[in-house]
Image (cartoon, rainbow, N blue to C red; front, top):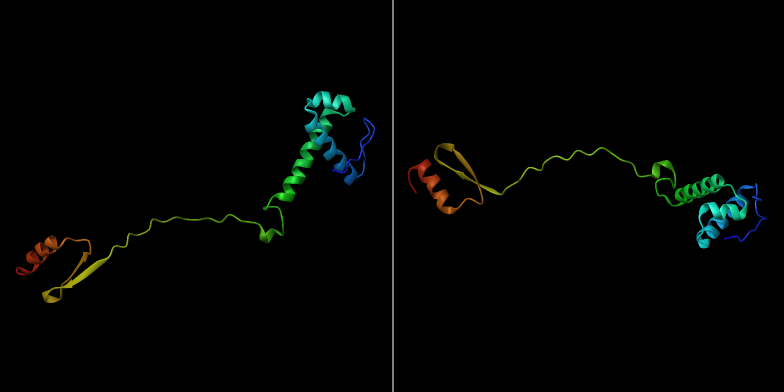
Amino acid sequence: MSNVTFPAGIVPRSGSATDSFWRDTLAAFVASGQSVASFCQERGLKQATFYSRRLRLAKIDQQRTSPTTAGPRSMRPAFVPVVVEPRAIIEESFQIDLRGGRVLRLPASMPAARLAEVLHALEGQL
């Protein structure tokens, strides 16, 4: 804080002095515990000016700390379209070459007893 003081009802006109004045005034308001109406009346300030300056300084502070407004435009985060596609379930499998050039592809999770049944049905013997 700059601790710049002005007589009641007198608000500086230059940019940095104005910002400094209002930052000090807002800090004093918070410390006072008063309502906006009584604080402004006591200091000869217009409530509308109080609210607009408080909003203006909040926006300035937000712009200084916001990562989306800091730095060149090319460095700002950007949203890009994303399409989520279901992943194909890739299951381990094995292949058995049968007589006559036939190929049997089965999942690795197939129980041995079931495999024997399939082979017996296809080949007629084990």
